[in-house]
Image 1 (cartoon, helix red, strand yellow):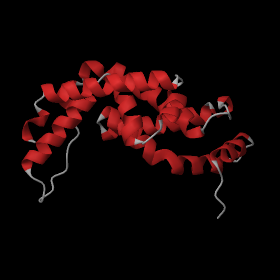
Image 2 (cartoon, helix red, strand yellow):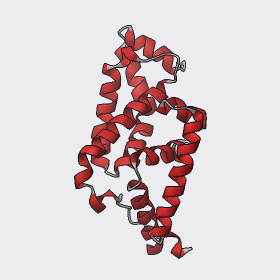
Image 3 (cartoon, one colour):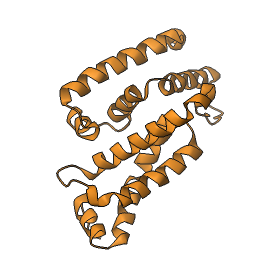
Length: 181
C-alpha cells in the first residue's frame, strides 16, 4: 500500500474521492478524540464532538490552505469546537470534570487520588492554557507547530505556555497535590 500524504488525500477528496477522507479520519481520529477527551473529561461528549469535528472539517475542506499542515488545521477546528462546547456546558461542569479512573488491583489508592487531583486541576485551567499544555505535552508539538496550529507567533506561544505552566503548577500546589511526594 502506498502511503499518501495529507495534502494529496485532501486534493483527492476535493476531486470527489470520498474514501480519501476516510483515510484522514482513520489517521487522526484517535488523536482528536484524545485531545477532546482531555479537554472535556467526558467520553460520551468527546465521541460526539469528534464526529462533529470531522463533519465540520469535511464540509469546510474547500477552505483548507495547502500552505499549512492538515493536522494543524484539523486541530484548530477541534480546539474551537471543544472550547465552544465547554463554554456552553460551563454552568454544568462542577466537579464532574474529573475523569473516572479505572480500578486496577495493583494501583494504590493514593496513586488514584493523585491522578484524579491532577486531572481535576488540568480540567479547571482556562481553556487556552489547557490547550497549550495539551499541545506541548500530550501531542508533543514544537513551538513552531503550536504557533501554526493556534495562528499566533512562536513568541506568543512561548509566553502563554510559560504562564500556563505557572498557573498549572500553582493550582497543583494549592490543591496539595505535591503533599504525597
